[in-house]
Image (cartoon, rainbow over all chains, first blue to last red; front, side, top):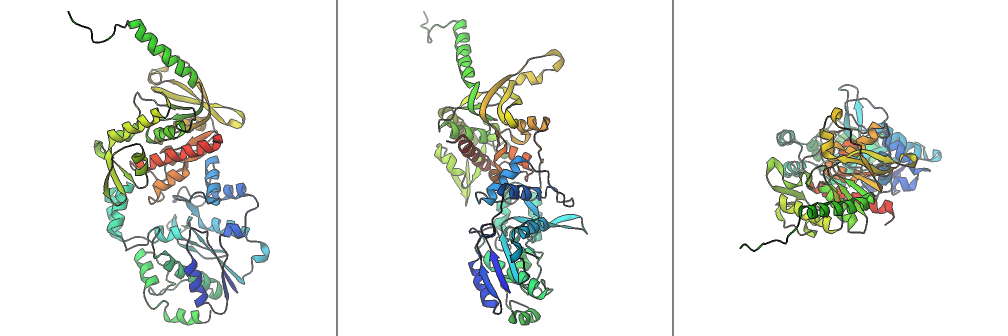
Length: 253
Length: 262
């Protein structure tokens, strides 16, 4: 089996590649650079249009294609050309995964290949229970997507953080002040701990495809599906790395 | 005997001076490279950047004053804050800034606003105040190629007692910097040529960046900047963040220069 990691140059993953190479002995691990450079779209305008269509405009409504505008297509084109970042946009995760999958040539779509794409796009999935979108860090499947923006935005920050936020409103300057108060208790944009966290999520993608098992119920295990930032920090930075069961399984990788 | 302080000038001379100079400038402004609608911080910034590069720029403002909300900060206090890196723009135009905390600067609203207005004027921007945009001029493939304007007071009069036709001004590009109202965009929406997404409430983090990065051509010939961007794309609504407005204006000017091939 080959584990292939993709990331554009702005996302640091060299330590993740090194980490997986050490952990995975039976399979080949390689870094293939930017996914869109490896598998360039035949028509960038069409791809821009397809991505613009999957923006989530109303998080309380089930997915439906966005009626795209000229400006949205131009924006997505600039993101694909790496001129700007997709800040402030939530995309439907399953549709994004589908778009990426379609870009992988048919002869590369074997289950013998684990494709893991690191992206700065924020994506979410619609929850049928509470009928709203939830942003996600990882979307397992083919390919597996891991969002660096999702690591910051998806797991909830400490409860007190949100109480402060309600009190101070939506002013970005006030927001920065609140962030300062809680500094260290959550992973932030540009956080030096980001790459360490990515290692754990990359392992979740590998476990999913190799063992058909992704998450662990044990809060200390790197495979724990964290819903809170404090859980992310706890599961990704405390020893031992894995619970007993997953430590054994990791040995056979 | 009282020695007159001022030279003797008749009333008719004053009237002629106003009329002739306005008429000459208005006639020249009937065709510009870029028309910027809205004289708030993003409009002034874009105007300064474009005019200083030799782009024939006309700034249209519906009020009799420029600056929009840039004169005052929160709670009507005349201190405004800007976040790094937007402070550099104010430094460049000679606005004294005080570092408040890491990444945050504070300055006097009146000082910053008046300096920005002066910078736009010094660069050669032509200004049409008390003027409202009623509609857009369209060319092939519905490309925006100008605006239809009228005096602001006309819009305040009941239609039954007034029938004052507007006039049209042509340009290669139009920039909408009219804030949340997105007035130029709305003219295209009324014609069924554009759709807007309204305000979104996805995530506040990076909302300023989102406005700057979405600044761009929203319809052929029409660039959207400032808070109009969040209306058009359904981005998270922000508080009074002047830094994002200044950077959005700068970005709009860069895109206009690119589209003009300059």
